[in-house]
Image 1 (cartoon, helix red, strand yellow):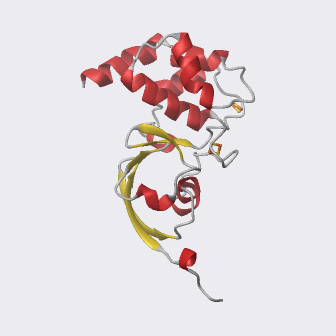
Image 2 (image 1 turned 135 degrees about the vertical axis):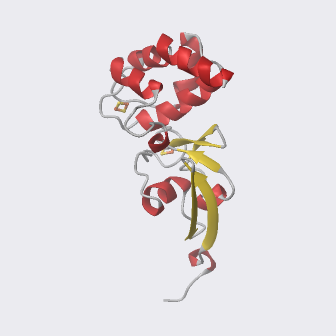
Length: 169
Ligand code: FES
Ligand code: FES
């Protein structure tokens, strides 16, 4: 079969969850598919594939990004954090523990994106109001929980304490 320009592979060097990766991919592949199929990080979920549902949200250089709207080749030189990078070994991140404690997930399809969005908020502001949390997560759709428990989990005092500690370094 004749190869076109889009079939050509480009080399990407990136850091995901603290680990350096170097791989070659077609320039048309989204970052979401790169994470899932190239790197095997299937915690990132793909829902709408056009920037609406937020399920695919990951942190790129610390900022929440829709990985379905980015290309894998745009990961070049960036630092990416996915849901797989939150826990320390078997110990869940306090925000993950809080989601568990508050029953803030049911099917879990939205959870990786919710966690990424919430984490970016909490890194800037460990004690957001419920209104601020609702506004920030308004770009992340959840079909199961009704959102109330998700807001409870993000506003949890143990999470706030941990995030304040992170800010102090
Ligand atoms: S899959 Fe990316 S926003 Fe829905
Ligand atoms: S827990 Fe099912 S979509 Fe949010």
